[in-house]
Amino acid sequence: MHNPFYVSGFLYHSRTQQILLYQPNLNNNSPSVWTMPGGAGIGEEDPQKSFKRIIHQLLSLELNEKQIFPVYDYFDNAISSLHYVFYAKVKSMKNISLPDNGTLSWFSFKQVSKLPFSEQAKQDIIVSQRVIQAQARSDSGILPTSKVAYKT
Figure (cartoon, helix red, strand yellow):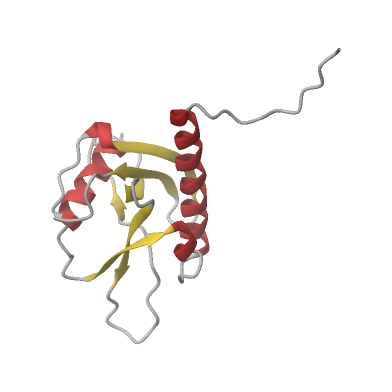
């Protein structure tokens, strides 16, 4: 039997260092929070393929697997299943269809800190930002410094 899981994540435009977030339209009068696009895995899909499918369904954007990067996964008590977080690098911020049931906007990580989120979504974005920054340092050849005492 296949265990149920949930995936979420965002598109990342590295040149501008912005992420695409989603704000669903709610039918009631409660304030809407920003979130990352996400949804449940289907059948025998692996989490990366689920993320790719969800982005395609929501944004009419076809990602290839080389664009998609894992951030982390955890057991989400709120939904009683594993939750996988991804980001996908995109070269263009154009040609992304708007969903009928919500709003999409590009934000810098600094702007994101001022938006209303659930605590878990906020944590997922913070961890994602750290993963992206670590990868950028690695790609540029900048390694973290360590405090090592050398004998002279």
